[in-house]
Image (cartoon, rainbow, N blue to C red; front, side):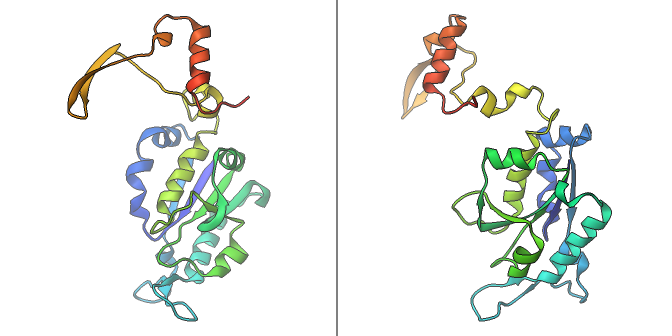
Length: 223
């Protein structure tokens, strides 16, 4: 699967995509990640990508033209069936991102991620270029770079071979409290020493009791 990121801050991605599961996925050639800077598609000597908004208001708005040219350059590099490709714009007004959405996107061959900045992007990008708008939550960030990284990892986890074990998908195994050695750990809690023990149900090796405990204290698991 190929991810193409459109961002005026390409350097903000390198440390994360060069580590952890994304690094391994790239090394296995399961995932391709490419970053395109809209500044490279400007025509003035200052490489201007933003302008003040029509109608007034604070801040600056990313111009449509550099974004448009950047996306078109990506489309020329990989010409595939438009049904196997999706263009996403990150926006606080977008569809809420969750596991179901992540799984849906993992079925595409290519996803182009447009990262906004400042007061947003010229609305014509959302209306005529992007296939859909995505929001990762009810809060505001300075740009789309962090949402893009969240999207990258969440979607990549659903691509066969990216995780070491298919069962590692949290919606398969469920989400529940986990413990490891030592059985008794002593640490400071509110300034006082406290011995913290692993729950008894996890220590007996009884898989029925362990499953019951995990179901009792877990949050979700796919049926």
